[in-house]
Image (cartoon, rainbow over all chains, first blue to last red; front, side):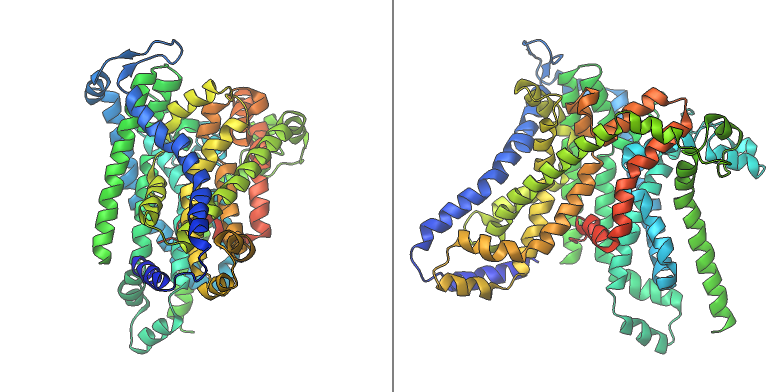
Length: 311
Length: 275
């Protein structure tokens, strides 16, 4: 992409507009056309980020006019705050497990649909449904699916004689994170499935034919040809999953609000609780800023790694 | 086909059916429970209702459902319109006009893709309160538009770069300036790209939760996701009513999907396919 951009840029420069009226008009266009964009970004993204860091140096309940400047006290508190570390650990666990489950299952389903062709069209339609639900709706739905007495999971286990496995899925700190994670997978696997399927459809059929003629088995074809050709897409999927998991909020908030006993607390849920329930605007901003720093650093590292491999 | 082939096909169908159950059973549960009476639900979770009753739906529809729906429609359509206007203007500049800061500014916009919205929540909340927009639908439009801009500008820029330059060059020789060339040439040719981005943003904003949660508080100003959330608090003991509500609230997107499958999928995936 970068190269073609340079190329068009160069050829563009050689082909300067003939009419002279342009220069001023071009400048005017650039300014006028970019103004709304950067005004919005400044007000709703850039300024808030700066403001968050400023607020993180204060102690403030959000109501009184006086904000007490306390330097880096909030940041020192954050470093010693077991809840924040717990939240970060949960975030990381979600990152890892999302990568481990969502991508391979998404890939497996894409292969199934690719092999099944038109006959599996109805399957594909239904596979996609979870992605269309709002996180709020699927969160509430699964609260009832997980109900220990009237929920589907428990009643299914009892029905097949595994009643002893029934847990209080969302109430037991030992299992709750996994219960929630299963819902996250349920909702997002279709996304990766469609992403991989689209990429697979882009692989020319001739490659498959040629491989079969050369005596390759389906297995070999998948591991040696399909998968390597999908590396680019897989990297994108991994980056999306990684950054998405670090920002995670909606579904957990709806299902558990980070509980019980902080077993599903995430950076985002902790931040919302501190800022908008306990009205610790200063400390809430500290958590938010820390989250920002962590995500930006990880995003940069991920970008660096993927770019190096591409070169 | 050999025996191996038919075994393979059976395995494919078996696995496909397995995931069909995983993906579909929660929807079956949701849809059929909504037609049951509370008592029937408590005695039979899995079976279809003996009698499909509509009272749960009636309860929901007599409540604030249409109000939430209207709020969502308003916020989403206003936001999507503004997103397209602001982004197409900017994308045109990035795709078609060469100037010194272009690369830097474009990178700055793209950086917005990874910024977690949570870092802006407190300042945006404070700003909204200060300008008196707290608990209004308009409070949502600003953040919605701002956070949708990076991806939309990025993809529209790619789209506009693909449009052949010859057209514009010809127009330029005839004395057509950049603004006119945007409105008469590039914008009409970008319609497919705009449609895709409209769908992508509409689906995303239709389900948005955090800003709506932080920036509104009264029932009158809730969008659909927040409305569901409130209902759930109100009726949490009556599972069939909740399920009727969830079914109703999921219908708009599911119906849209069934009607315009390819388009919608393309729209939703637009954000990811930039790789």
